[in-house]
Length: 227
Image (cartoon, rainbow, N blue to C red; front, side, top):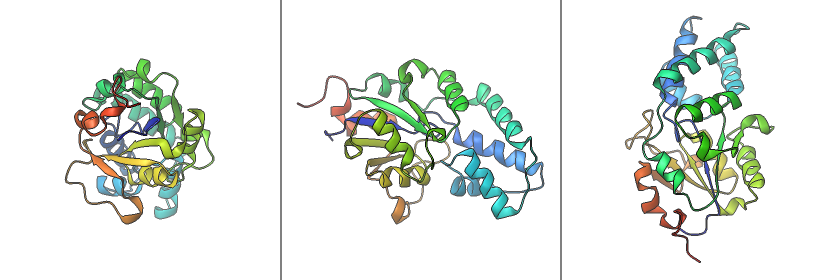
């Protein structure tokens, strides 16, 4: 497991247990407009995608013209829910604190949302300014642009980069970037019984808990790298 010079973490559903909150809030806001979708649909079609892509999909698939204030209303409702419900993934703080190679965050979330999320769970100091959002690139996930941008800014070869993702969209992006991809299935929206990924989104391995991170890759831990 040696040979990684950079670890890129997705944020939602990886560092923070937020995806189930986001899905629930989106379902609730759409129901106010008479559109009934379930959490399974949200997980399959929206997980890991940026807000503009999600809204475009809703317009295209359901022919729903969203009110001008829909985005602002949804975002404010979501951030309010985060204030009381958002939790850090178990063992994530220890993993980041003990990391022996450079790491960063690459997310489809908006800059405001990721900044607030990391602050709420106490990760701002550990992550610092090493946060890259889809607003920085022309194409969001599943295109490789965001991960390639992050690797370039971190001055690291994509082939020497490990990506931790939860969504099929993110997995596809990491694979397209030529990176090693682990799928984290420890969030409340997934789990060890998550169905096998389709062939075009098959990660190199699954990670069920961050408690096992350094058991799998001990050389990534501070003081444990090989020469």
